[in-house]
Length: 385
Ligand SMILES: *Cc1c(COP(=O)(O)O)cnc(C)c1O
Image (cartoon, rainbow, N blue to C red):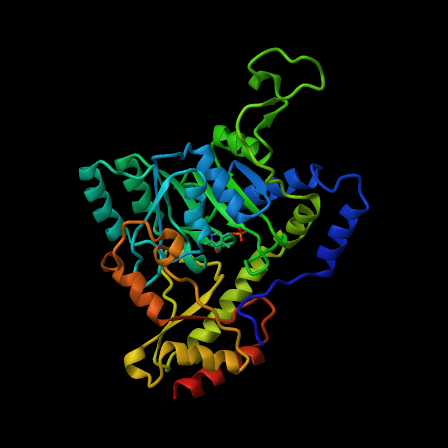
C-alpha cells in the first residue's frame, strides 16, 4: 500500500535520539528549550512552548486565553476533531463557520456574516481557531481585522502548516494571532513521534502555557502567594496537566527541523507533478492563493461527480483495492455524534457538505518516488475512465 503520508527518519535523527538515551536527561533537560528556541527562531515568533501533542498545544492555548464555561469558541468544520475538542476540554461551547469553496479554509465572508448575527444575539466567540487546511494559511489579514472589530482572540491551528508562509512571513510568526499551534505527529511535515508546540509573541501567554503543561506548578518566588518555606518549596497556582515533551522527542525535532525547508520544497515538487499529471481528469485540484506558500501537508482532489460514472465511495474503494492508501480529510466535525448537541443545520454549511461529498486525499510524502506517484495517477485515471 502506498500510504497517504509517512515520516522520513535520517541517520542524523537516529544519532540525535541515541545521544539523548546516553545522556543524563530523558525529560526536563536542555533539548526541549533548545527545540523551542529553534522553532520560534525559524518562525520569527518570540516564544515556543513544546508539549506532548498538537492537541495538548491547542488545549494549553485555550486555557492561557482564559477559555472556560459559558464561553464560545468557533472553528472550521473541515478539520481534525482536536481543533474543536480543545474548547470542550475547557468547558466552552463550540460552533463552526463554513469553508471557502476554493481553499477549504474558513470562509471570511461566512465569518463576517456569522459575526454580524452573533453581535445582534449577544453570542460572540471568545476565541476563533482558523485552521490552515492542508498547509495553506487562512486569509489572516481580514480575520485579524474582524478579531479587532469584535474583540475575540485568535489561535491559528497550523498543525498542517509548519514550513509554510503567508504574505512572505513564516506561518507561526503570530503576526496576526495570539497563539499558533503546530503538531509533530508522524504524518505531519516534520515529526517528534508525538509532539506539538504553541508559539506566541506574548510573554504572559507563554508563561501561562508553560504552567499549564506542567501541573500549574511554579518554582519562581515572584509568582508565589507567600514567602517560600525553603529551597524545596513550590506552589501549584493553576490546575495544570503533564503535557511535557521528552528530551528524545525534542532531539528528534531539532534534527528534523534542519531539513524542514527541503521537505516542503520536495512536497511542492510532488504537488506540481500531480497538478500537471491530473489536469485533464474530471477533478478539482487544490487551489493555491498567490499570497500563500503552502506546507502541502495534504493533496486533496475533488471528484467532479457529474462527469464520473462512479460514486465517490466506489472510487475510494477501488483506489484502496489498487494499493493506493487514500484517505478523507475530514468528516465535518459538527456531524460527529459527540457534537450532535451543537445547534447546527447542514444548510449553514453548504460548502463543507459539498466538499465532504467529493473529497479524497491522495498520497504525498517527502520521499515519495516519482514512480509511485505515476502509479497513483495511472490507477486513478483508469478508475475514473
Ligand atoms: C494533527 C492535527 C491536530 C492534532 O495534532 P496531534 O499532534 O495529533 O495531537 C490538530 N489539528 C489539526 C488540524 C491536525 O491536523
